[in-house]
Length: 178
Image (cartoon, rainbow, N blue to C red):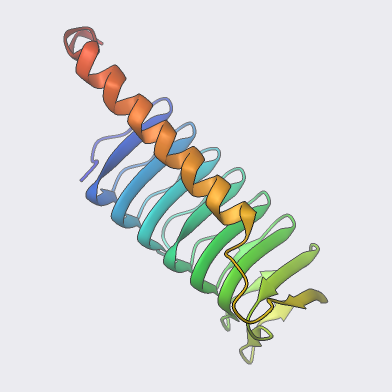
């Protein structure tokens, strides 16, 4: 659990990661389960099995997510890029949206006026009340490999988390002094 206001960027990794206080800068997260309940001032990059942004949170920049089950219930000012199995967008998105997933659902609170690109197994589900622009949909070929985008994003986030762990390990005393 990350609590207490973060005045700069946040790097966090763990089995269960919960962000309960505002982050002024970027947030880079990796974990089995990631839950964000507070505003992120700039970009959010996260990789995990389950990623949930609740409606009381927000993202002031771009959103990059990779995971299994992903729920975006918080407004995002910038663009969104997601790779996952099941993806729910149920909030306002200020920029373009690029999704690679098995299933994509736009919930009743979704408002997406920018370009939407979706590569998936089935067409997106659009709930009553959702406002979405035209979706550029291309179906995955049956048995095709996962998209390169998703693999690259996951590897990038894992390397970022490992770098953060190494920095914390080798500079632990310096970090405590800050």
